[in-house]
Length: 150
Image 1 (cartoon, one colour):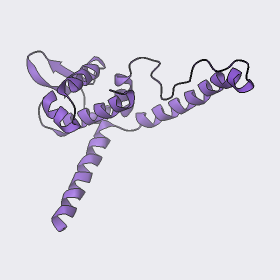
Image 2 (cartoon, rainbow, N blue to C red):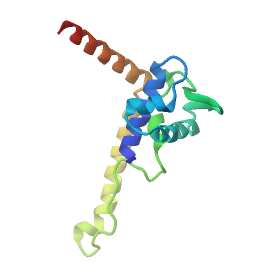
Image 3 (cartoon, rainbow, N blue to C red):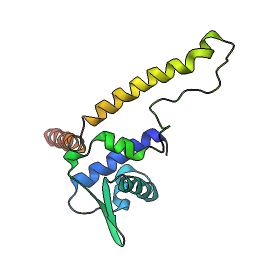
Image 4 (tube, one colour):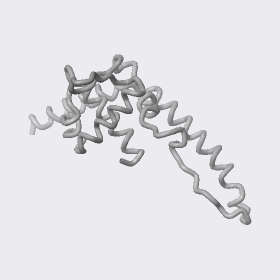
């Protein structure tokens, strides 16, 4: 799974867990995400290692370890990163050192990309899982109201 979609799948998974009473299985989550349950189990493993979810051997499903109002999207983003090099942007390797631009582009882009990464992380830190779940529930209520009127 591509890095960018891992983050979205993690938020999708957590939103389902937050909006559902009790435990739900990886099969049910996979049905909503439209992916294989193995992908969801791997995601649950990452989120468990990060302390966002808890699982019990022999018991299907997972649970949030704390209220969704205390889980930020930055927590989720960091949980699904493969390593510290999984930044928002990657810099191409081996630019031409004989070119005025090529010789200096990596240093410049490292600074620019680091600022963008910090800005993105600052935004994600301001948004909680509860906000996402609430927004999703409101959108569904609006959709149902519109379909009933039509």
